[in-house]
Structure formats: structure tokens, C-alpha cells
Length: 55
Image 1 (cartoon, rainbow, N blue to C red):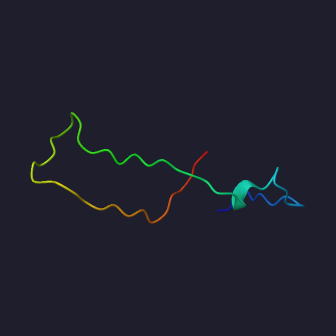
Image 2 (tube, one colour):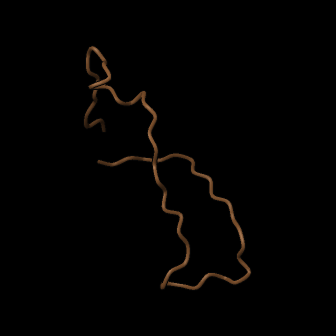
């Protein structure tokens, strides 16, 4: 289901920001008060496939 399409004409820097660099901060914290971290855990790897943005 298509809800909305944004396609301004002409595309300018003021109305088309999608070709500009963007930076996202991902919270990769582990641990906390919910459970303890295994003492044998020393390192790991996380790969991000894609990021979906909701506004």
C-alpha cells in the first residue's frame, strides 16, 4: 500500500535532502539490570543490514 510519494519538481537543495550524507547513532549497549553478562564474553561482531527511519 503506497501512502505518500514525495517528488518535488525541480529538485533543489532546499526540498531534496536525500542525496546528502546522513549519520545515525545505533545503541549497541549490552548488560544492565535485566540480566548479567556472561564473564566468558569478551568480544563480538554486529552487522547492520539496513536502517528503517520512521518519522
